[in-house]
Image (cartoon, rainbow, N blue to C red; front, side, top):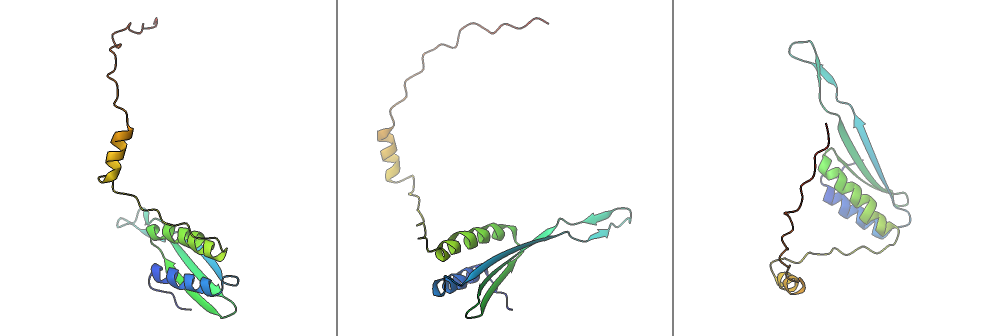
Length: 140
C-alpha cells in the first residue's frame, strides 16, 4: 500500500473516488498517540522525555474496484484541517448533501464603510453625572 506525498493530493483523489462510487467508498480515520521513549539525561540522574507524537492515517477504500488511497501525517496543524475535510467535505459528498458555498468577505475599505456610516446614528454627548456620592467604607 502506497502513501501519498501531500494532503491535497489525497483530498483530490479521494474526492474523485467518492464521485465515481459514492455508495461503496469507505473513508477511515485512525489516530495514534504513542508516548515518546525517554532517554537518560547527560548526568544520568533523570530521564528526559519528549512530548508524545500523534499520527493521523486517512484511508479511502473502494471494495469493488480495490482502490486504496492512504495519507499519513504527524503535523498538528494539518491534522485538524484533514479531519474537517474528511468528515466535512468528503462526508457531504458521500451522503449526497450539497456543498456549502464558501463566502468571501468584502474588503472593509470599499463600499461597506460608506454604508455603515450612513446607517450608524451619531452618538450623543454623555451628560456629566459622575460627580455623585462616594461609596461608604464598611466598619472594620
